[in-house]
Length: 193
Image 1 (cartoon, rainbow, N blue to C red):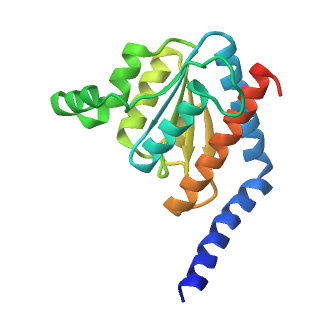
Image 2 (tube, rainbow, N blue to C red):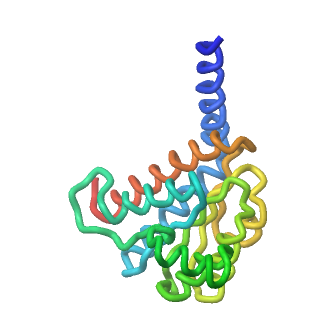
C-alpha cells in the first residue's frame, strides 16, 4: 500500500507542475518577475522574502540563492528573508503583533525600487498582507507566491504567481521550483551563462 501511495503523491506533484507548464500566462508572469528582479538588482536595490512556516523556510532558501550563490561564483546580491532575526521577530510580535513583523522591518530596511516576494499558500497570511500594504506605500514592488485562488494577495501583488493547486504541499513544491527558475535566470541575466 505505501508504494502505491508514494507513487500517487509523486504523480500529484508532477500534475501540478504540468498544469504550471501548460499555463502560458503564468509562465509569462514568471518571465516578467525575472525581469523585475534583474532590474532591481542591476539598479542597486534589494530583494526581500517573507513567509510563515514552510514558506519561511522557502523564503530563507531563495534569499540565500541570491546573497550566496546559485550556480556561479559571483558577487553577492542584496537579498534577505525578513524572519531571520529572532530577537527582532519575538520582540515585535510580543510588543506589537505578529501581523506587523514584516511590515515594520520593511519600513526600516526597504527603499523605493526594492522588491518584496511574499510566499503564502493561501494568499491570506496577515503579516504578509500588511507587508504588501507597507510596500505599496513605499514604492516597493510586490510579488506574491500563492496557491490557485491567490487570496487577498491576488489583488495586492504587483505580480502574482498563483500555483494551480489548492493542496499546501503541492503548492510549496511548485513555489521552490518557480523560485529556483527565477534565481537561475536572474543570475544569468546579471552575470552571464
